Length: 83
Image (cartoon, rainbow, N blue to C red; front, side):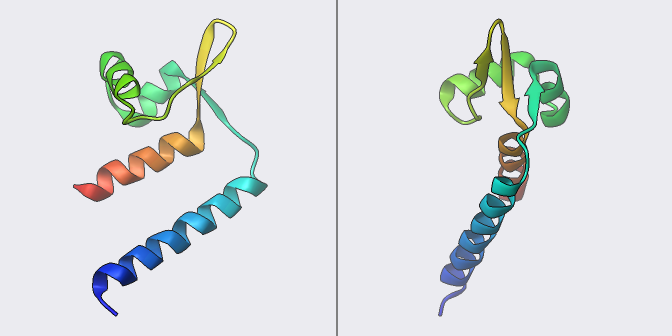
């Protein structure tokens, strides 16, 4: 088996484990301010990435927009693991 296919299988197993863990956890909401602090990007960059589809879309709760913390963490991990 090639290394590439082994990495793919390992990544798929990791995603499955994360999905199972997420199913048992409660969902944590993060406001825009908290999201900016976690991701260390500017508000403008956040909105550009959201519009481009490279960052998870927010959920509107009344006048507020909130993000799911697990999606933010997943995005952060994929961003920094690619570099």
